[in-house]
Each structure stands twice: as C-alpha cells, then as structure tokens.
Amino acid sequence: MTEEHDTAAPANDSAAPAAAPVDGGATAPAGTSRRRTPLSLRELVLVVVLGVVFGFLYWVFVQAWNGLAIAMGPAGDLAQHLVFGSWLLVAPVAIAILRRPGVGILAEMLAAVIEVVFLGSPVGPLLLLSAALQGIGSELPFALTRYRRFGWGVFAASGALGAGLVFFWTAYRMGWYGQDLLALRLGVQVLSGIVLGGLLARVIVRALERTGVLADFAIGAADAARIPERRVR
Image (tube, rainbow, N blue to C red; front, side, top):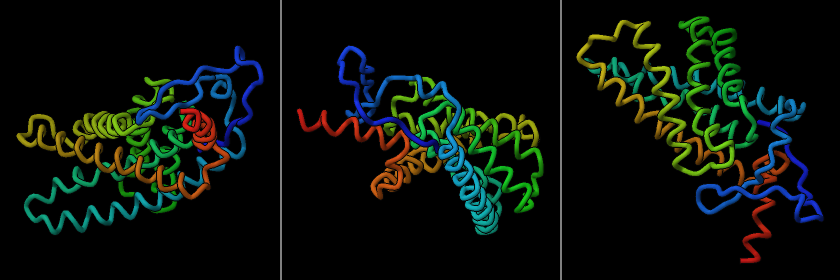
C-alpha cells in the first residue's frame, strides 16, 4: 500500500545496497532508508483504498459465514473457523505491495473501521481489537525477514500467526476455554489462515502485479531491480 522507490541504481557499486534473497530465487533491495521515512501520500491513499475495499469484502465473507453455518447444521459453530482466513487478506497484500513496517496492521484496522462504522458489524468496537491482533500476527513473519522475503512460506506463516494470535483472545471472549472442541477450533482456524489468509493473499498479489498497476510501489521497484540480474544469468 505504499508508493514506491527510486528505481535508478547508483553509479558507484560501493554505494549500492546489497540485494537480499527472496523466496523463489528473487531478490529485493536491502536498503532501509525509505522504510524509515513516513508513508508518502500515494502510499497512504493505497492503504486507505485497500482498507475500504477489503472492509466491504470482509462484510461479504460474514454473509458467507452465516450461510455456511446454516448449511453445516449441528456443526455450524465451526463455520467461522473455516472462513476465518478470509478476514486476514488485506494485511499481507498491503505488506507485499508496500514493504513498509506497520502497513499490514493499519490496513486491517481500516477494514475493521469500515465494517463497524459503515456496515454495522454486530461485533462493534471490539472488532478493532481483533483487527489489531490479526494485523500484528499477519505482519510478524514479514517483519522477521526485515520485509525482504515474500515467498509462499512467509505468506503461509503470516496466515497461521494472524489466525492463531487472535484465536486466544476470541476464545477468552467467547468462553471456549475448557471446551472439548477448543483444539479443533484452533486447528481449523489456523489452517484457514494459512490457505485463505496466506496463500490466497500471495495469489492476489501476483495477479495484481501482472497487471502492471503496482509498478510505482515497492513491489514494482523490486521487480525492476531483479530483471537485469536475470538477464545476466
């Protein structure tokens, strides 16, 4: 969700930042000076757009959850865990595009604001706390790589942690501790996080990337930096 970088390489090789490996053999610039600056207006606009779009999508997923719960009959209480990963999507998408600390948390919070303020989420303001936990969990794996690795494994870890971290808060709020289904709930939710909140997020990012609309953001700059390396090889 951020605007992006200067793409011209320094003429002096000694001044050029080293390249850090990215999953799948790609490389991303290792310089961090841009990450320490505030988000640009273009980046902020992108974060807001993603938050709004996914806020409405999250509401659609709530309707899907309700329908699935009815269809599952006695097991309908597990439906929320099956679709939970869909409510994690915006964080890894934002992070992969902008590659800036905090944008995943911010995007999740904005999506929650849309749900609460404009779409009347029955969870109310508590949804903002859940969104913060989801954003923190989703962002942590990328932060541990210093926002340099964006392969399938990192996205999967993002979905797993995003789903797992918020689960313990939800379990406390809903009184699930001590229930026989606690472990099953956690397992299903984490799996949903991996598939829907992690792997699907990477598919979405790659699809957007192919359209060329992300060329002016960090992900586009990273791609431009990789092309000459591949030709040399």
